[in-house]
Length: 595
Image 1 (cartoon, rainbow, N blue to C red):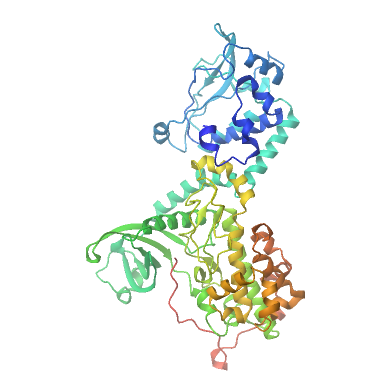
Image 2 (image 1 turned 135 degrees about the vertical axis):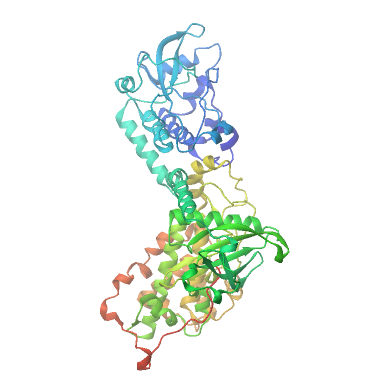
């Protein structure tokens, strides 16, 4: 299993280095020190976090006909009389895994009997299947970790009775457990740190074993719209792979095709729906990716993306198509950030939306507060996606929803990749907008191998993430948006022109400003000792290793001292009523497409 599945994806991993992959029998302890041997036990335990069938392998892992296993046992565990745990070869039986309930697999316990195999003169290890009711998947499999971390003879005897019937014989390969409590504690701390490292192995386990089933139950209980209980209104967006409409989810089928003809008391929910063009190449795949990403973020980071309800497939004879895939969101927006950027009075046109009031101070101070708040919210959303292991790959103003509550939400997740398990990741595929993408174009090097099975990719994800820093792909896009929001001259440029200009100056925004862009308007970024310009230059750095992560950017001087809570009551003033001659910007544009 290790050689076949991990050699490519985890090649750079220190615990699966070439000597580890080449180890055989009695040479085991010559290639790796005892500490690394015990560390590997933690990851073998993690491999068990799926419904597996434990069966006898029938062979000894040591050198046949030699004293290899006995020699290793004496070196690694001098006390031959004390019972200790052995690892066992596990064979995945996919059919059985599908038959068994994911939430209630059987729990197997391992211990040693006093019986000796006469042919090999080795003690026999036995498996016990408890007679108690089956436990939950997470609880049952989590029991492996404390066992591997070190179990005393007394504790083992108390857990597994010595009169347990013999069920099967398993491999007798070297012991991987020390009864040293300091070492056991250190290993548990190390494994906990690895589980919590980006992009979150532990979080992925919780998500797949607990949150995903709970979400499925919630969706089943709530239900999703069907075509006969949905009245589709005006088209508000169109793309290569789908059209976006306003719609109403009704309580029962109605004999009307007009939104205006639906009685108020029959409306269950106001919707935004996307009809995927199934006849287009790649449209079905993008629709499936968007469903997956919306559900994942709804579980891990609610509020980061538009509220996703679900999807359904309909048959529509009048459209000439055999089937239609519909993606459904709750209506939750006034427009995209791109809509607001295109208006002449940006950023002050968003002042009352974000702060609910007009602010006091100079024009530059008011504009700076708006830009800082928008940048802060955008980075927080990007950070939440990265904490969940998801890279958006298409962060741009048109893919950022401004909700009715003044919150930014991410749209169009069809290009996103989940680097916890490798979902939607193809090494030589680049899905991006070149106007907002970094110079390297790929979220990870093209030489990165295709991910293996999801559970194995998940275990290796922290190593891949630390080596390639894929999250900094999105932070470059945030830098381009920051330049558009804060510099009027950049905002008036076509995004493609801005990208070409940076390329002409070797992506050096400071050099470009000094030589050709002094008059574009840098007042917002030059305030507070040019803290904003320093952040912009770092975000647009052509070298990925020098770019800040979203978390680091949030801690920058430009943003660290600003938050909505930091605005004192004296900083804002109430918005004048229309009767008094005041009035803020109004939104007449239709709600944006969610993708």
